[in-house]
Image 1 (cartoon, rainbow, N blue to C red):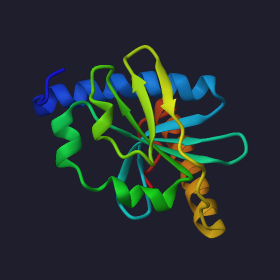
Image 2: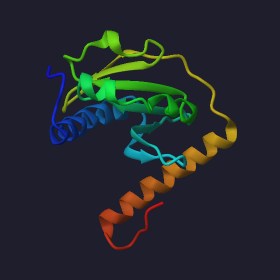
Image 3: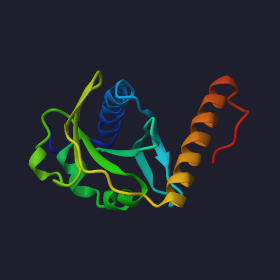
Image 4: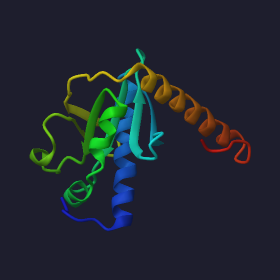
Length: 153
């Protein structure tokens, strides 16, 4: 694994990893959205909503340099019940926080290697995130039907 990718390579790698992650989450019964923007303005790589309303956040790290240069991920903890890192197969797992989940992914599939304990999210925040998730999904679907027809959140 390269410790450093160009910005374009990192974006391409992250997009491919997101596809594998979303496939895994769908197989597990979750609906997922990529590039989900929170009310705080931060953007989570993948946000997933379970059948029971569980909120999962997945932070994708395409290489070690990407992980080391990004300190914003702890801010996601208050917006989800479980936070996962998704990394390529050759990423050094030992550098990732032990209290977060671990998903190893490629463009075609993914596997959860570590599942963190479920943390409570305040009821008002849960409702707000769930409504934002639903509205975002609806708007994205609407843009597929009519690219001019919907406004961003």
